[in-house]
Length: 193
Image 1 (cartoon, rainbow, N blue to C red):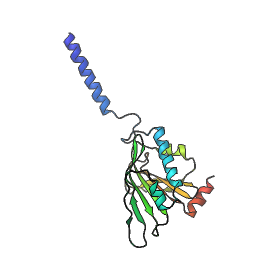
Image 2 (cartoon, rainbow, N blue to C red):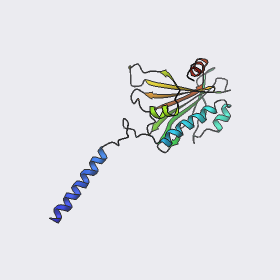
Image 3 (cartoon, one colour):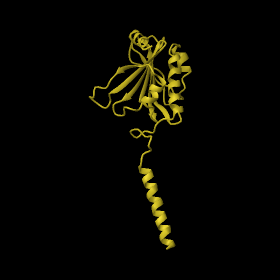
Image 4 (spheres, helix red, strand yellow):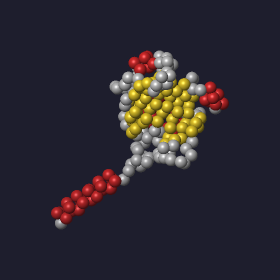
């Protein structure tokens, strides 16, 4: 009888372990675990910090870049922007910008944009809305492909930050684009107040 109970207990333990392994956590969204509030805050604070530095000279901006690898500028041709690969950036405990890029104006006098492609835990649309109650919808998916994105924009002083949620995983933030705000965006943002 004791041998039966030992084998029975081992069987139940293995079965419970297997079921636990196969069942996704309750907080998972499309295979991604939900970001902690600390990670969500770090993403938004990091984005706002980068946005506040956009008016610095490119050399000042690049010198303060938090990544451990940054490439030399790659020119896209005469009179066109240059692109710098900003490398991989650890933003939170379970969140990284797997790719980052910095664009510099043709005359190398200013940063024209920064893009961060995120990977790791899910920063949800609700996390975004909790941080930014006033935002613009600047792009809506038209249902043509999974690569389309819903883009929500926030205007900060002279800058614009665009948060993109892909059609393939619409509840999780996939990329952030930071650039100077155009006049139309600033006007629209004023009407939200």
